[in-house]
Image (tube, rainbow, N blue to C red; front, side):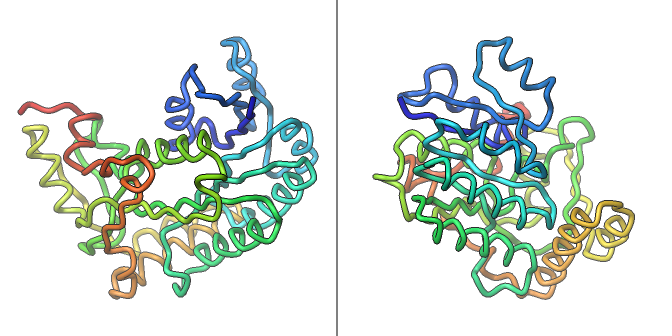
Length: 290
C-alpha cells in the first residue's frame, strides 16, 4: 500500500484534497499533517492517521515522513518557505520519499516578483533532489478571493480592474488527488497549469449577482491599499511575503503580468473535464435562484 502525507490538511486547498481522497483512498494510505496537536488528536479519534508537523521544526520531519511514499507539499505565506522547504525536501530524500507534488504559483519564470522566484527555487531544489516531482501552478484562487461573499455580499480585489485567470480550490485539490493516486509513473516531471477563466473583479461580481439573483459588489482597490495593511504585520517572514504580494499587484496594475491573464486549463489534462467557471463555483458554493 502506498502512503501519502498531506501537508496543509486544514487549509483551503488541503482540506478539499482530504475530501477528494475521502475514506476510499483508491490504493492510498493517507497521513494528515497539522502543526496543532489538538487537531491531530481529533483526526486520530475519527480513525485517521495523523501527525504533528510544524515546518518551523525540522526535528518533526523524520517521524512524519517515516514510511511515506508520496507527499503533497505546500508552505505558508512567509519568506520562511525557503528554509522550510529545503529542510523538508532533504528529510524526504533521506526518508526514501518517491514523489513530491508541490503547490506553487502561476508564474512565467521571468517575473520580477520575489515570492515567485522563491517558489521557482524550491521547485529547482526538488528536481535536483532525485525525488520524482509534479508541480501544480494555480492562478488566482476563487475561494480565497470570494471567502466573504456568502456573509457580506461583497469582496475585494487589490489589482484594480485588471483581468486575471481564476481557478477554484476544489479543482486544484481534485488534480492533486489524481496525481497522488496515479503517482510518478504517470505524472512525474509534469508541470500542471491551473487557470480556467480570465475575468476582472467587477466581472466576477456581475456573474455572482446573476447567479444569486442579488447584487454582489466588488470593492476595487490597489497596491497602495494592500501596502498599508502589510506594514502592520509583525512577523518578518510574513511581512516579506506580503510585500512581495504588493509587488505582484503593482506589476499587475502596470500591465506587466500578461502571463497570468490566460486560460491554461490542465484540469482538463489531468481529469478529462474542464475546470470550474466562476458561475459554476457560485452555484456549487453559494446557491442559485435560477
